[in-house]
Image 1 (cartoon, helix red, strand yellow):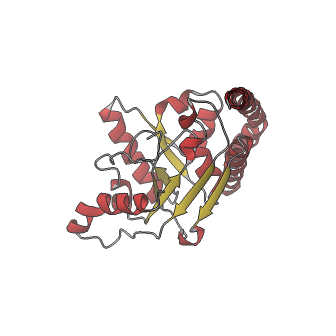
Image 2: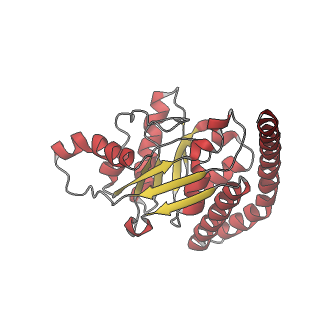
Image 3: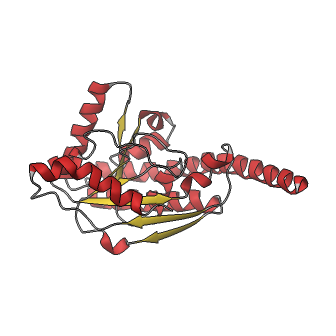
Length: 249
């Protein structure tokens, strides 16, 4: 048994190193795509540019997750309405963004921590996707980011937010940050709750070593925000929290 555990640990270390190298190599391969994206933007071919960005995002997400050996099971794709939506998801681990990029076929941007913007190539690519970066230590900047997110939704682009604000690194959900759903209520777009169940098992549950895991992603029915009363808005956060939590193992 001890020998088996040692072999498992060595294999996980090898997979973790492999993933780091894979991520760097993939970023290098994004350079030619960046040139093409710039060309489309300069020529005013915006729809082609956004279609290409979405294709790159899906390929990146799937390839990163598949490289871990993990299996992603998605339920409720039919619940995603047409047009811009605010995806509201729990946040278990670092692989949540690749999972949502790669396995939900709808163009989307993220409200993400500012540290991600500092990764070479990747940060610029996320910015191209209309992702918005928040400095959690700067309340004024965070407010500006939320207002920018509202405008992005009004302009017709879907977004993803993790209202817990940080990874839970386990099966339990943290509390939602106050006002996090104002993105949807101000922009008058549907809220689509998403439950990610098991992504922490890929890395956070293994002392930061990468292992294959079974991850279940459940997309619940949309909550429309156009005719909400004040009372509805007051309990909206608790309602969305309960829906997401109900699909956790």
